[in-house]
Each structure stands twice: as structure tokens, then as C-alpha cells.
Length: 185
Image (tube, rainbow, N blue to C red; front, side, top):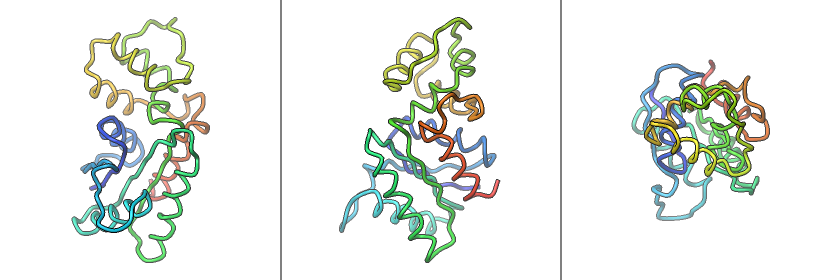
């Protein structure tokens, strides 16, 4: 399966394909950051998602996976969902959208088992509180022997929504449901 990914940057590029692989299996990912999508007319996430979908069709991708961080603004998620519905009226290309509350790192610090195993933390290490997921994840990775992006990719590949304590609150459960619905797995 060839999938086009759109996200906030290098962390999403490292995190999203392994997360989605847990649902759809092996894939050929192609990643583009939101800020790298430059449009001549219009702006915003909806127009950028429409562009990403058109580009995915043009290059023969099987679908699009688009994620953004809400950064405390839940209306950002609605923008993507509305555009996905608009795209469905004219095309059958699968588009899975997700919104991480407040950041994608919240998805990774929510499952304690991979944090402890992959980052080699003691079983008695306290659970991250999820208040500042980027800072918490950075601190945990910095204390491990792994390079940051490799650690993020490994953690994402090992995350289980069933073990997550706040999967509904962080948006992970809704995102993985969207992936299952769109790609039929």
C-alpha cells in the first residue's frame, strides 16, 4: 500500500507510518509537512488537504493520512474532517484524518509499556503525566541511548491503543478508528 502522509514535521514523519502500520500492515510512505505545502491561492488546512489528496491521486498513492496537533484549539480538527467529507463527495480516495490533543507526542507517552521497554526505563519509573508531552518525551528519550527520531519511530510502532490510559482524550483512538474505516482493516 502506498500512502501519502501530511503532518507537522519530522516527528510526525517518524511517528505516523509505524502507528498506521499497526493497522494496515506494510506500506510505502511518502511524507509532506503542512508548512511545505505552498498554495498560490487560498490557505489553511482544508485547502492543503485538498491539494495533498489531488497530489496523491496524481502519483498513484492508495490514500492519504493527515494529522495535525490541536495545540489547544479543537476547531483545527473539524477543518480536516470537513474537507475529508467534501472530498468524499467527488472522489473515493481514502483519507484518514486525525487530531492529536495537544500534540502527537501525547500518543506516545500514553502507553507505558513501550516507554519502559524501548527506552530501557525501570519498571518503577513514574508514568508521564501528559501535561507537556513534547517535553516529557524529550526528557525520556534524552535519558536513553537511542537517537530521537529512531526512538519516536520505535515507540510509535509499539503503541497499543488498548494499553493507553487516555486514548480518547488525546485523539489517538479516533485517529486509529479513522484509519481502520478508511483503509478497511
